[in-house]
Length: 134
Image (cartoon, rainbow, N blue to C red; front, side, top):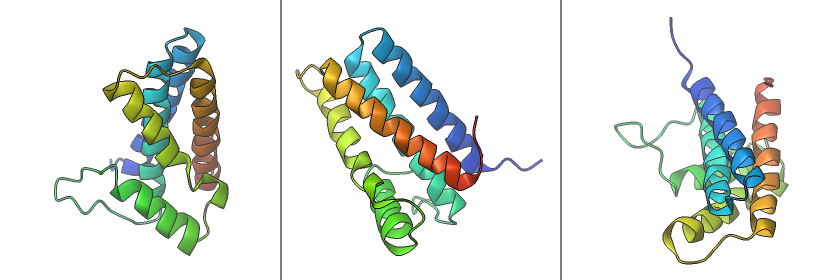
């Protein structure tokens, strides 16, 4: 039985999104920012894999520069598979996660709710393109 790696990353994205939802509901906004970013990142990896784009890393690891660059460059700009409105989702959620995880900045409820909304839209777009919903 061959397991589709894009499906695995899509499932990870949905789990991360559920985690972000839970963290927001429990007022853990830094954690919400973290999980919202990873929901987007994992969904983007699933989209790249579905489009036949592989990681350049020999071990198959996906970098936080390669994924957004390829998602925007290949899947939005070149192939027009996703709406241009998603173009800044990965960089914006990444920036918020970086601040939440590595600085003394505190993620506000407003920032977390906005990141969560963007993550929902991003993951949903990937799910819709793949024809799968959960």
